[in-house]
Amino acid sequence: MWRAALPNVWPKAPDSMTVSTLVEIEACPRRWALASARYPAIWARAGYPSRPNHAALAGQVVHHALARITRELAESGCTNVRDPNAVPAMMRVGGFTGALEEAIQVVSALHRDNPRVPPAAMESIVTSLRSRVNNLRERLQSLLAQTEVRPTGQTQTAGPRSTHRVATGLRDGTHAEVDLALPALGWHGRADLIVLANAECEIVEFKTGDAKPDHPFQVLVYAWLWTRDAQVNPRRVRARRLRIVYPSHCMQITGPSEADLEKLEREVMDRTGAARRTVETTPPEARPTLLACRNCSVRQLCDDYWQHSVQERLAREANDGERTWVDLEIRLIGRRGPMSWDALVEGGLRALDGSRVVLRDDGRMDGLRPGARLRVLEARAAPLDEAAESWVVSTTATTESFLLHEGEEHN
Image (cartoon, rainbow, N blue to C red; front, side, top):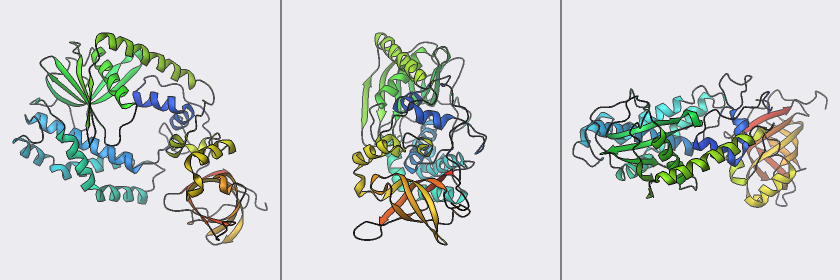
């Protein structure tokens, strides 16, 4: 069990900004800072260990398989997955299922050293992804059905996850996962697909989930980066077509003119400056909202999230009276049994705040003492009686507990 402790040193603003980082800082500077700081007591890598989200992992798997297949199609001289020559190309990647299986292995390997994911949990995640292969294949096929590629004849990448930074620029053809950078302006990004033909450019961004308001901005930023990146695009070919491809539909966006690019650059730099300023304070401002906090991987560290006023507001927004999965701050009173505690709720769900509850654990709280204070994420709460005057809080395989205070032996 880890201690819910703030970082010793708060991170500085990122040297190079991306769309996802900008949007994250704008949504909640505190969340970005907590997630980006160093925690040497937990691991040597930068950032707080993330908790894998099944939907996000599934999206990463589909993205990896998309890049693998589009490269193979382009190198084989195919224009799309329906091309007659696509059959041998698809056989080389093992078909849709083989490409997805490879992607599952690659994506899961990225989390093998994550101390927040025990080996058994990682195996469960892999099993879950494999059980959803049919659904993932449908998404993959839907995205590819809307994709036209330009043959390159020969790859300019060194492997299935490599990206392009070539001194002579990209030649005509389809290029997957292209790194774009403007070091002088402190910006970079990675375009899912860049299609070049006869001094014409199309940028394609694949989305495996629902449409979000920031998606058009993202692909416009890629058009700006592409036009200004003299290394990858020395001819300054403008992207005249932008597409955001979802499994169910495709969004067409007119490529920005030079005047549009200048206006976009001013907007990007203004937003970048504002975002940098928000993370210069210590600690940075917290902006708790229902959606942001529910999906926050570091909410156990955020004191603002646990404030009574914030919890009451979020509970009203979520109609928490009907929720069974809860985040609670509790103090252990004493052992009730080998796998249960009497505990007092000191924060979290409004209906339970101040309540004495029975906490049933799965053995992970052995060694704790009465008086210990914990923040418990995604526990299951249920009334012990019809009047809901007494509650039982149960930990499950998805529950996480973080120590605030160890308590006293004779508290």
